[in-house]
Image 1 (cartoon, rainbow, N blue to C red):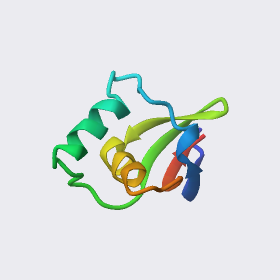
Image 2: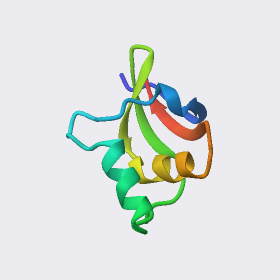
Image 3: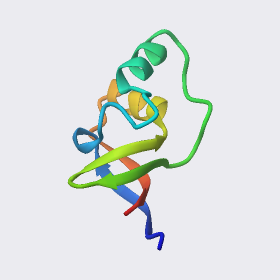
Length: 79
């Protein structure tokens, strides 16, 4: 039973820094600082895990938002 909510304003501080595939926000931050920006557009994809969110897709977009001073990001969230 999939339960999705779209265009959710998610606090970046509530997003886990690593996902179950081993991808990390730290690596994305390094990549973006080195000029490797996101090739994707639109909302990031997050999975609700307790009171946090796991990234399904969008680490580079999140990194770009952090580096531009953003505190929130628009996401499609699976609960």
